[in-house]
Image 1 (cartoon, helix red, strand yellow):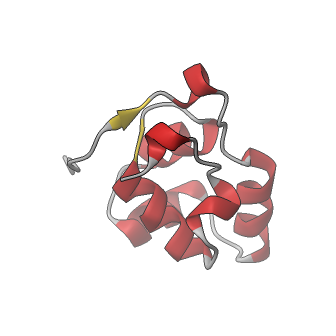
Image 2: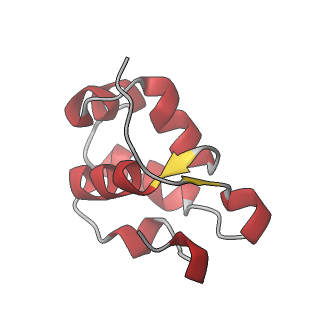
Image 3: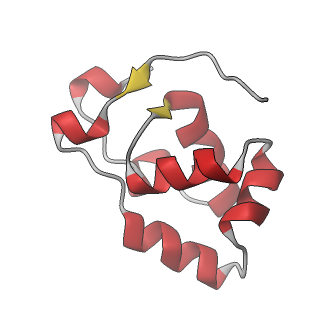
Length: 85
């Protein structure tokens, strides 16, 4: 199992939900599935699913997903003051 260190962020409590539709649109444009994205960044597809839906997301995972999709982190994961690494 791949564990990452970082502060576990509860995005639902601060209202900073990920841009789920944008993430899915980027994945369609790149012709990749959640499973493919997960393998590309070295995590389980369940972790990618949680990130896309805004639950149990750590900062390093946000960075990996954004990099794999070719966008800035802030473009798909809006941040509040408490979200900074």
